[in-house]
Image 1 (cartoon, rainbow, N blue to C red):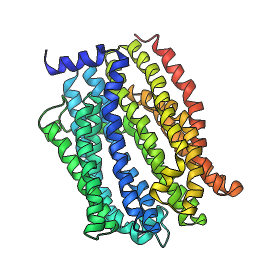
Image 2: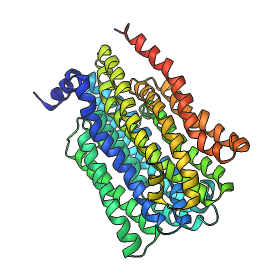
Image 3: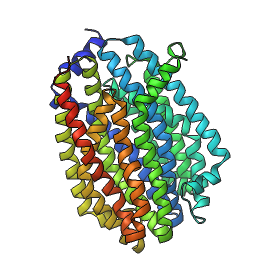
Image 4: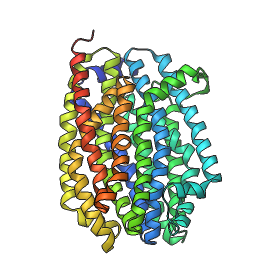
Length: 448
């Protein structure tokens, strides 16, 4: 049996209860390690000053926009690649993987070039105060330099996952992340480079990750390929990648925009509030990343079987994901709720930061019980190519609900409004996602 047949058999015949966790473990590890080196930057930079700590929160939104671009092309191409392989259309899969890679490289390079020219106004737009601005510029310069590596790495990572090769994807991401964590204290403190050292460490790790992932494709490990000969200049190919991947861009991009809006709304309450909310956001992202990682383990199962027209197996996968992810997130959220003061103090043991951060984190932990429902809906619609509903759900939490809430609530209840906005967004989004998801599952009973 060749590798293509073996992969087809694995994704269409392995029991769902074993297959999704097996694919989810490497993706969860990848997501957590990715977040870990962001948190490592926050931890080491927070030892410099309160303003420097705030700069990592400011740059979180910029990194999110760059990652959102990579996710858009990667998830868009990955979904199409997986469904194509399920339908045994190999040439189509290779066209979409190569086209997504080279477009992401071009877009990442453009982000880097424009960002470096206009770095100061961009940092101010992202919510930087006058005290935070010098640190944000020093750190942000290196994040922008890493943009081409970040966009292309996310494309390759997602395509590998959609092919069911989550372990290879994990190796590429994890190696760069571990390097980042090792370089942070060395460059910041030993070489006395301050916050620039954290930026250099991040940039170096991203290029290492990109190189490792590219090596897998050049060695022809996956069925898809990255080669100029498979690149398509047909606008329809690019448009299809973007349309399918747009929910990922919306989800990640609006998360960055919401972080920027949150920073701006937190400014009247001082650098302590900005720092506290950025720390809470990073802890929250650990929980979010776990949920997302589990969902990414489900995506190749969903899209591959959907392409193979095994609809009952798709329904079984959705039900399993919904139950499994809710249970896992409930356990993690409970632990974070119980140890909220210790988690906040780990980053910044400052009275103003603790006062705001502990309450915000505990409220967020309660709302995280609704997160898996939103994630299941998002992942299912995107993996089955139903980009309209996937896009709507991706926009709902941060775009339709969080941003208006964080703009309005502080006028009535002050800093509590900032603490409540994100949790309320999760709850409302879950209420909307539930009937849409149940409707799709019911319709699939009648698919032929």
